[in-house]
Image (cartoon, rainbow, N blue to C red; front, side, top):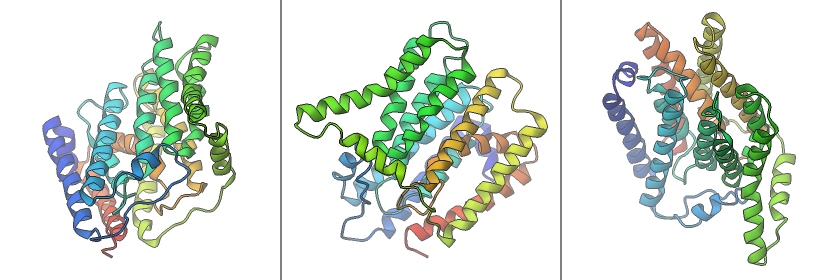
Length: 330
């Protein structure tokens, strides 16, 4: 069974998470072509390309993939536990994050959204940490700064800009200093990039052209029939999670309720990314953070372990289909 080890202790959860990561990594290495370029090109994701262009060896690509995904999974569970979204012994969100993340990659370098997720998670942590804090300007600056860095790795995350002020409205009473410091933190990465571009005699306005072109290119998402079982299970589990929240409430503590509202808003904004251009056929790659935490909380609170394990195994079946397809095994 999978659910029990992920709810018992950190040691048993780590064994499960590391074993799952290594299994995916070994499978990907064994299916990787012996020659050629493996990486996708994402010219619109500015800082991501500096990483993408420098990794060509198979072992380096897979090592980077595992590092980025494990770091994201660790931050997801740290955020969920520290901000009281899930129970302290619940490590299911990290496991779900692994599934969602590995579902979006194959033989190429990790998807840019997963790199950007690291900065989004840091931003979420600092924002949520300001709840009822008397001196929060430093945390708000860091939160805005990390949220401002994320679009440089995955340009579609620019849509998360309104989320900064949504979180301020949910977590704190209105104060102009809070909003101003958050805005300054968000714009600082843009200022630094433009300054460096000026010093290097490059077009300082090219950044806005990249952002503008991406935001204008909405279209229908590309879907593969191999992703249908996994997407179907994700949608089903999310609907069951929402029904569960509507039935028993969003949490006993006010902070828990507010953080779950933030995650729902985050999911709503991430879903817009589904209609932005991307070469990935797993359309929910951007939604890894809210889906893994919310569904992980639902499965962790379920008292019937047999039902929880059944749902998770069905999700694992869908994951196996999409991951083997991405590796060109099926």
